[in-house]
Image (spheres, rainbow, N blue to C red):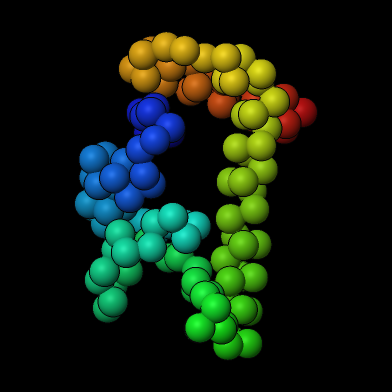
Length: 119
């Protein structure tokens, strides 16, 4: 879990600040990401961040793109469930602390949540 940031921080900004792409490449890993991370990884030949396809009013998705989005959603579901479990800790809605201090709290809550969910 990366350091906590103010809620107004965009996904790409936080990823760039934490050097996520460089760390993933150095570890030989990749990541499945939501559409908020589009444009972060522009390396077409060796992508590290995989995002879905975006539809608009003028650009409809092809059946293949819809299937790719579904497959990506299935891979990301456990992560989204983890975030949902973290939100069960109602203290997070009232947390008004320095992001540096809240990072420790969030990491501890993540451990407790994993213990509770995996019972």
